[in-house]
Image (cartoon, helix red, strand yellow):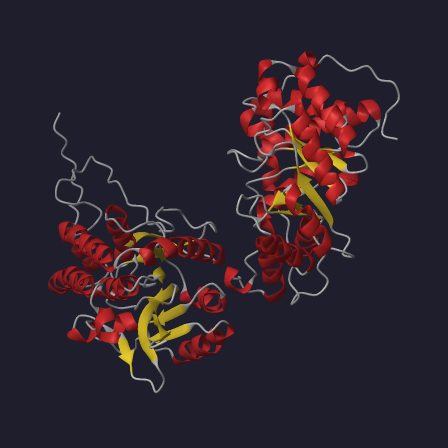
Length: 305
Length: 308
């Protein structure tokens, strides 16, 4: 049962306004922490375990996805004791391939559904898309909201759509992509986060990765604060997933600092925080190897996908 | 009211005051910075050393580049490699020639700096002119060295077998301590003529014209990251040069035997191509050879079946 105790749905026009300058200042502070040696290794391992290894391209093939699944299970065999990534993120048609390839590994398969990335399709198509992905075996569904409707102020439409997709997900976890790069203001980001959480999202996610800017520290901070407020109000934890544009280990550590200082330890696990990324894993592996050997690494010695 | 201060006129050729400086004017001193990825950052470490002339006059504060500055330069050089090595040989040639054009127009500054660092005026003039000519020399080789080093190889099977050169990648250059301009120009030009990108550690005792050469690079058409210039102490950087896994070759212009041994043994970690240029007369024709280019190249041999 995922229904919460009777709670009235708030008027989303009254979502808190965001102080942009304050948020940017606060977010920049997270980049000033010095994390070295043992703490750094611990952090990098945690980052690896939080990655949703992603391939979302028109040219994706079964072979490419199998390759990625292998990478997910064997991040770097030369380095003992590495964690696995949290999930593989693919298009619905490739869920079955990924599911088979990952059998027994404990790694989840996430599928982007609902006419990803634009979301410009009738609701019936989106629901069919979601149900298809779930039938194929997806453990997690990443849906996109209708940004056009949202920007028009049609919040009820957006809310209802998320709720219906949530229903179509069944057991699968629902991540709601706000595509913050198209929402223009932090006020909108906060409002969209509130809508998604009240409509039943298990996770809220910044971006599809197809629009620039994708995830940024300030946007993620606004969403984390929305999650925190929601948690204080309802007692229900919601996960967070920044996606797109996080390619460097150092930046990923900044995000972890932000999660820790905004949400506390409870969110510092793959169950509540994820990175949507494709090239981040290799950079983290390079940094870990640097810590171990003392020598700066080259991408030549790490797998491409 | 006419000022009748009796301040000593600055010495001829001193950087403290060129021809027009008046006694009342505070001279604008140049900040000598690093050159990484087409930008002029100060060293992230905040450290510097003070350069003095033979007479003890302070010439400038020079950045003491750190491990992290070097790391950033390798990232910049690696990022620039793809574009630079893919440029047509003829285009690289044009860009090297452009470097010569830019240096030609700034001869006076380089002569000035070389004399400050102890050269005689005549020797400085000779070195700067040789440096311009050296750039033109290697510009000319860009689209020619392939012809003399590539080959069609006779083989005993029905294959068309041929070998061509490819740039090795990111090259670290330890520039010579003396002949600080011509040595740096020669090693840089020969590295990038063949499509490599480079990180150069300038002469520790004579770094002024290295930093000024970075300004020449920046005003020519060399893409950012193709040549990066660091200043600082070789002794504290060499360990990072030789062990960095993303460096493909290291060129050492010096004769310290312990250093040569260290470079040779450390380079085995990722099979860096070590190149040693010892006892070279940089001003002579000895430093004008296409082998300086081929030293930093890899040979690719292709077996192409025929008659099938």
